[in-house]
Image (cartoon, one colour):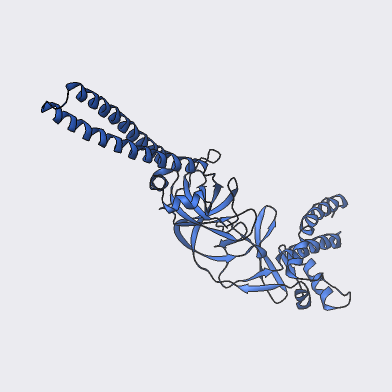
Length: 352
């Protein structure tokens, strides 16, 4: 091999090694100790064999596997709900509070106007009867009639205000939340008192659900656990940044979410599919793709490409392209990737 070509290849592999080396820290997550080798022992033989293995394959002796805390498991495919990754925004409900209070005040004004009208109507009828019996002058009828018409106009204005606020609530927040506002229901009071938070969830452009999503899962920026979201209704507007279909959900007030936060949300599509649930500790990133390591023998592991189109959370996926019965490395995958890159570099030096 020409020296210049060997230098170029060594440089490329060195870049890969630097990338994989940055992933070594993941070994600490497994409680693993650094790989220990002995020039005359079986560990060194295993590492040496890795240098001559096929691309994507790495060999570690049983001792080395124990050192890094490597764990494998046979994961069976099972039905899983299909999910779309969506975008959540925790809304400020100040406008909901304002509309709720305004509608309550308008209702009180309507009741007052109705009471005044009823009194004026009774007074007008009484005066009119007395005038007809010549017990009172005609001008008293005119005065009572004027009061009645004034109170009737006030009643009409109060009714109009109530109808306008109810329509505004429906237009701004939809039929369900609009009804909560009009009825001042316990649901809207929980939002006002921040026992619950209102979350607008927007799907990516072009994504359509087969039905209404009854629930969804969100991830708060401040914690790793998933947060349950309960469905309310279709949203009355989309997120201007995303331009997809939107829905209103509610989250518990102690979920870690706060108004103004953005969060990733996983929304079930209504369909199910078969796949293997794979946690983030089993997945490595290499050359712009996602991979897992499958056991190829007692001391050998083969890197296998996977598709991450079906997320369960920000890091966990349901994978359909893993051969049935495969033994997957669930702890220690990042260390295997690093060792593979080191072995590739050593093999290149041996060829030169």
